Amino acid sequence: MEHLVVAGDVPRDEARVVLAACAGTSTSDVWEVPTWPPHGVRQGVGEPGWSQLDWAVRLNPGYVTLTVGANDVGVVDLSVLAGGELDRAELDRRLQAVAGGVGFLLDELVDRTDARIALTNYYNPTAVNPTGLPGCRGACFVELGEIVHDSLNRTLAQAAARHGSRVQFVDIAPLFAGHEAGDALGPGWLREPIETFLGVQVRAYCSEDDPSESWVSSFDCIHPTGDGMAAIAEAVAAALTAPRS
Image (cartoon, rainbow, N blue to C red; front, side, top):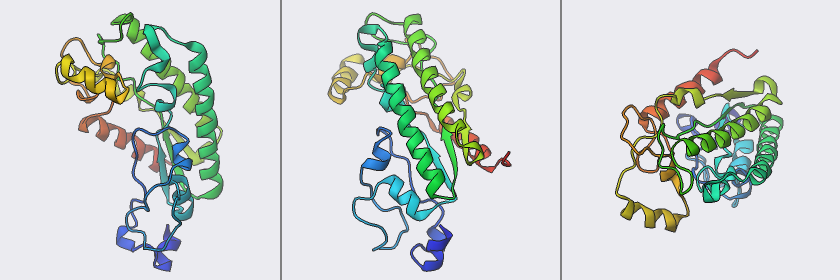
């Protein structure tokens, strides 16, 4: 990033954050889908159609954070749990695709930038007593949710381990123990048509009860609240500022 400041392409007072997270994307979108130029970049820098990866390589930031893979394996649309049963073969196929995609991203960032990279895993938002899916509620859904999240997190940890100290693996999963999803906002008759239209079933993670101390949004039962975001940010910052081994 410093070379762009010196060249006048990015004002020094705007050279702190170069990319923001984009929810709802698959791993391959990071290098396949065009994105807007990052805030603060002068007009004329870059090319139309550049992806997030293209910009990361061009800007060569000091730090890059990645959280990818959940949409690829079906954590949001729950397609690997159709009918309340786990399609293990399909999950394995998707995990293999995640391993390849994340491996490619990390290879590119390590080889083509000087950035220190933080790859996070995922917390399991599943409530202690979740709504679940037809044919798999309560303890059944807890078990399947754990299998999916644990499998994804192992895949991500293995991808990070290949790159030594350049890639810090940030295990955020334990932070959310005791802070799982609470009760979903809104009545079922209102939420169900919305979820059908969007093709998601995230309310399955939410609680049948109304527990306190949740760090998971009651709107979608997946994303973190402000407290959850603060805990994740603290863990990522600690990983990126820790001495390299």
